[in-house]
Amino acid sequence: MTYFPPGPSQWAQAEPSDAGFDPAALRAAVDHAVGNETKWPEDLHDATARGVFEPPPWNEPLGPFKNRGHVNGLIAKGGKIVAEWGTTDRVDMTFSITKSYVSTCAGLAYDDGLLPDLDEPVRERVPDPAFDTAHNAAITWRHLLQQTSEWEGELWGKPDMVDRNRDLTTEGANPNKGQARPLEAPGSHWEYNDVRVNLASYAIMRLVGRPLPELLKERIMDPIGASGSWEWNGYRNSWVELNGRRMQSVSGGGHWGGGLFISSRDHARFGLLMLNRGRWNGKQLLSESWIEQAVTPCDICPEYGFMWWLNTPGQRFHAGTERSFFGSGAGGNVLWVCPEYDLVAVCRWLDKPAVNPWIEMVRKAVV
Image (cartoon, rainbow, N blue to C red; front, side, top):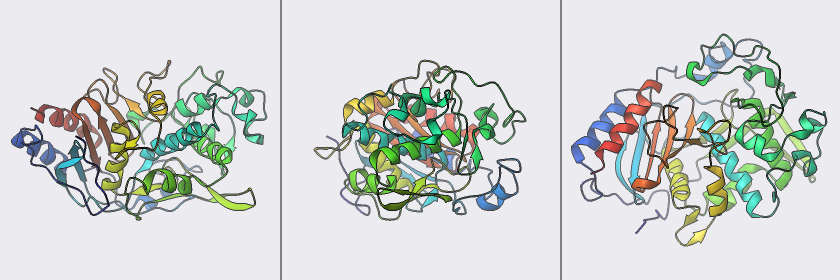
């Protein structure tokens, strides 16, 4: 029977052997994580401003930053923590794991009947100049969620060009990133692009008519007992007037600052909700229908769903089980949901080459 931790300071522990783990093997997985901290600098604002992640003139920070913490994480099975290391209640930037929360806000809109057809052009429900051109007018919600939109334009001072030809295997060291290439028809080309994810966040905010952090807090984070320490930020120039309110369109990552600042324990709660198909202690917070769609492979990029990474042989998280899915953020931030083992694991600030070995070690620790 799944245990649902009632509050942020209340989380039951289980002995590894009682939860079906080899204690020594689990300890080795934890030691691996602790011994392989990311080589990223601690001052993330300074690194961005110096062009470490983005060349000028696109490196200008727009949102808040926070110096990163050190490697930490936890592993929970059946909802109970079986291993924990580092400072898991520390609030940190989480970069692109934020995208999985953007997807969840879209899921809430879907559940509320505001998004009945994912293949409908976005402009049908969100009339906005961003979708006025002939090319952009064909973009659907599915395209935005799967990163196949090929949207062309500029949002919050950042052009989509900044992430064209982006290669995630060489993040921060790809000379082709930001180089022009011909755009293809929406839905026909997959490319990881933070400007377009920010567009998805903006469109979902327009659709629901309220700030996404407010929606997430009310419908997801408070009901799952998350702490009040997390925050979700946008940029200094991403404020808009909507329904008589001034609200900020939040970013889908920390590319130029902003995004979700959250602790590992709160991430794990969110992962536990996803593991249990949107149900928390008897209450359905997010529909199973949405989660099923969110973790369905994209036709042209099978390792990606609706802003969740999937386990595809030979790809990003090949060490995971077949039904595993992941929230992933730059700097070695990982949220792993593993249905086969009834397991949720979070690791922060893990060196990228160490991620798949860590996943494999955790898998092998299950007896």
